Image (cartoon, rainbow, N blue to C red; front, side, top):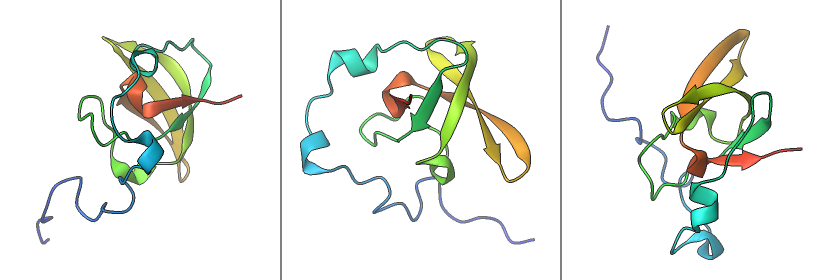
Length: 97
């Protein structure tokens, strides 16, 4: 097998680009937002914050909060036919209804 070249940010120039309105200072309310178990959340990477980032393949997906690990949340998503658990910082999460 050939080894993979590059890091997890490889080929993400457009995916991780933020819109002009999203650039600049990050509001503290977004940084410290809280979620309960069972809440539906959307996954959206904020490229300015490296802490608690997930693999870019899951950018734009929706998942369910299943618990916490430190200050990050365990998010359960379905990838193909499998359930996967991501550890994500709240800055990369959007509350869904």
